[in-house]
Image (cartoon, rainbow, N blue to C red; front, side, top):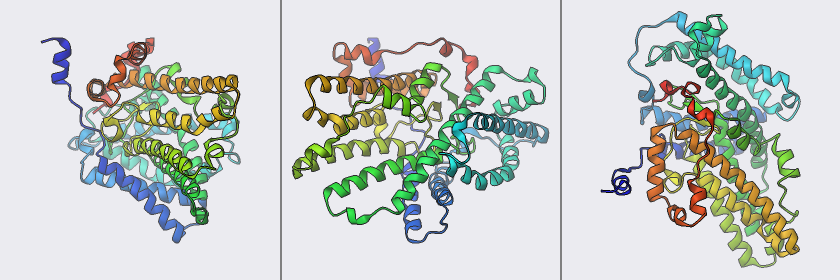
Length: 441
């Protein structure tokens, strides 16, 4: 039997870290909370309204995850003897982690309390007192049940208590990188969520009198669901719920490929270097033909649905640049990168009609710039594969997708197949000390 035949026999799709019903429960609770606020505004403060929705979404995910899926059994064991000195050391490490992010917020004017992130600062006034009250009891309870209680949090605490001999630079570096991910993405996503929530709660439903009105509302609402879910997932990286960070992208190249797609970097990169549009999207060209407008709009919405479905499938585990559990169901049953694929295809449909009203050279320029943006997401996908490939579960999943994925035939296309099989190699990936595999379930 050849190696290829052996692989075909043995390859199996691993079980997904999140059950699909649990993931959909979170999305349903998000929409129910928004509906409740629409008819019964419990609080007129926008930041507080957003926190209510985030809390409802978290309950929708973690109540069934804990009570039904018993996810805590993946990371926690039977309780041992309590150790208050170790727990207090971890509290020092936690305060040091928060202090690290607070220092960066203070250092960069981007995070001014009166600026773009004002809703985030308003929310922290509610969250931080609760967090401070619950932190030590939670740390003590979990510490008794960890297989390896001297984790990254304890090591950082020992370092801050001037006991560096107990700390690993690689482990602490990975820990702080994980906090850097949360510190960067959480205020950004929560701010987007607040803005979109306000628009949705005050949406003019009279606009739903035509397909164009339905399209605009559906497009906006789908992306609202996406940003609402991820606003919940970033702060909920807990070992109790098995949503903790296993490892964080260790290379500058991987971070670069991800960060240029978000503010404040995108406002520079997108407008000055990858601005492929001409100010007129598909509706301008197809608005006069009812059936074509509807057909084109439905294709775009179909792709956006796949994109949002990919976010929903993560349940409470979504996060850029980190590994928090391998998802193998939902759209990930058919492709390793359904969200990137659907989003980039939708951009082509939204912007492709510029070909109808531009000169051949202008059209070629726009297409080249959009291809460059597609290339950025290709690099994001490849760096993510290289990072997640440290986990044997992901390697089994990738092998299964290569054999059964919806687009597996593309690997046989000359040149394209070579491109798809390409894997970036960086020195950091060959340094196990940069990762904390002992924290993996």
